[in-house]
Image (cartoon, rainbow, N blue to C red; front, side, top):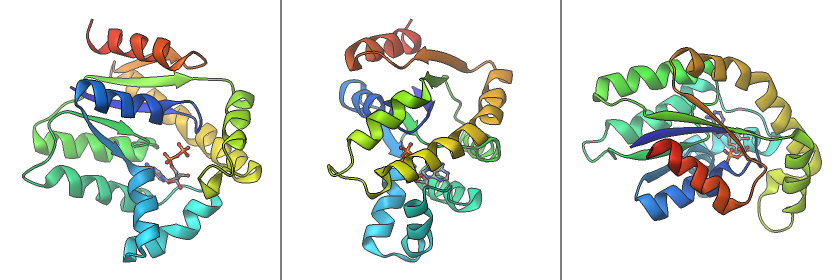
Length: 186
Ligand code: ADP
């Protein structure tokens, strides 16, 4: 099973992606986690992306594409995975398609987490102090704006390919999980 999650910051897609990993055994690939770890470790990539993460902007497509390609070109690449936060732009989606084709893999579904913007601001600002530096209100609003500006074209891209499945994301974790599993295992 190979699935992509699309959703605003705070839509709960990371939580659901980790549940799919725990319960269905899919490999979790979260570009946000990968980039934050690189920044923490001060690798060359990390030094490049640290200020971009802090500002709530998108890391350039070529860099993120390379991060993902590196994972999926390895001989021990995962066959079953859930992508959390990638692709985030239509250009990334096109690059990802090319990569999957080379690897002889295809996507089963792209889950689109639909949620009200004000709700995600409340959720994310609420978690400040419990972790992520980019969760202050100003940066949260920037990340949501970036999502608003880039997701339309991304969603159109996957809709055209017949892969897009919308889920109402303002629900409990368990309800949302059941809904997603029903889509993936009808
Ligand atoms: P959120 O969805 O809450 O913004 P993520 O952990 O997915 O959290 O992403 C955190 C940050 O990592 C983003 O604000 C962005 O700077 C960077 N990032 C993650 N994935 C991508 C991507 N596919 N393209 C560009 N930047 C990305």
